Length: 392
Image (tube, rainbow, N blue to C red; front, side, top):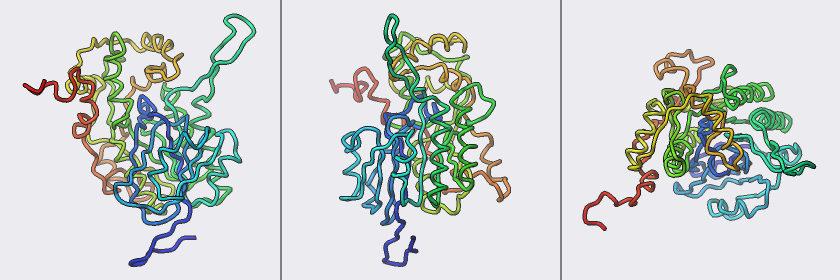
């Protein structure tokens, strides 16, 4: 049940669940690599119950619940694959008794249903920029082998489809599915293709779902700008694929969180619609590299690698637990990661079936120059004050 808010009254929306990834920042930008990098969700909701369904180990980006805007009364269900201690850092962000930790398995339909139960809104942001792997025993030398744990097909298509089907069966009012602005069926990138297939699967199972499509995200724990800075520290050279000429239009993670929040505030308005989230300006990856190193003062060796050569190199990185580079990332960063229309074309769309943008939500995209220094200056060799004369 829902109750309209009157002056001086509390607005109740019993149990709004959200699928919120709580993993260390998915890299390459989740749609960025996807760039779902860190999202800071500033809860501005009125008092209500709001379960947040959190996938923990296979998402692309993290939602940090920020209560700087005041106290909320949402009831939050947090599903995790370990124990509640892994999620305890979230507890201080909620009122006493307003967070609920539930064990679940993304392959166990009943456990996911338990988290969604009695909820009004589900926000699905599951994803991962690489296919997770684990060691298994084998009878021949070297007696251990890598096997894929969660594939892109499972993470980006099958699990979202299961969630959407459960939302239909359990009569959830609204489902918000987070995809990627470059989701396309004809991409050479497996991640991008499966993101598109996931959108189609969700729409089929829950036709009135709202699809949010961010471009690559930047923010304090991103895998976009931080990727360039970390590569300069850890690798003998920083690779650019096909000259680094592909374009991307990074969006600030907090702006995406704000967009999702506004959709949650008026979910009926966005039923069955698509919301594209993109930054104020596009850049080539070569320009982004120069921008990052201008801030950090790093002077790495930058090498242009043909795509096929880079993919072969990435196969080695792909064996690591959290790879800095994968063959699929090479494909993704070799293609444009930008919206399919200009802002003028978004504005000129007919009202029916219109694809929304930040402008329709009353959000102004934050320029990358305004935020990047605040978390990139730590890569300076002498620290934040290294350029200040007389400081040392």
